[in-house]
Length: 226
Image (cartoon, rainbow, N blue to C red; front, side, top):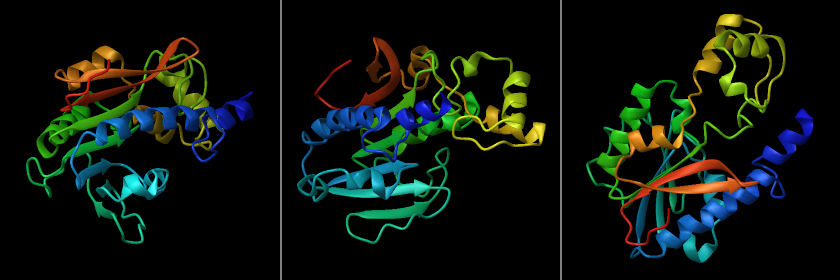
């Protein structure tokens, strides 16, 4: 069962469910980008060059993308550059420096609501628009550990499972305290929680099987969809 779930959730497999859903979301984002004049300056918080390579060449030519991560990525020049930074502190950038701040499945990895607030504030400060995606807390399958309802287990149970087994995308962490720290580093958001972080945003719902799998908070475009 875990093997099947990993194949469905594998972002490196073009045929996987995760990639198909991501492609649909990306098409929505590209539609928003097309309403902006070139060149479009984008800050991708936590992104990778591979993600942007899926965009058609004609679309990429319009973009100037800056990736910010805890470690520098190899980008090979061109329209993408990589810098080292922290999602909760983007002080190396000026207010309104970017046309768009983009982030895919990052904000839930900050561990605490306070850290998520800091990221949200920085997103607003440096971007004139934003597009922030995150998984839904209430989707039955937890997307990192790939165990149904894992996010609702008591913390001691989650830490024990991670310390005893390979769980989802995580290799077994024998030290229970380290396992607990890893589990605590993931803080999924509900629609209401995302709304608290981005009260002015519209919320795009990504659905699978009639259920909301993830949300996108987006703001700053005349084109609207919720």
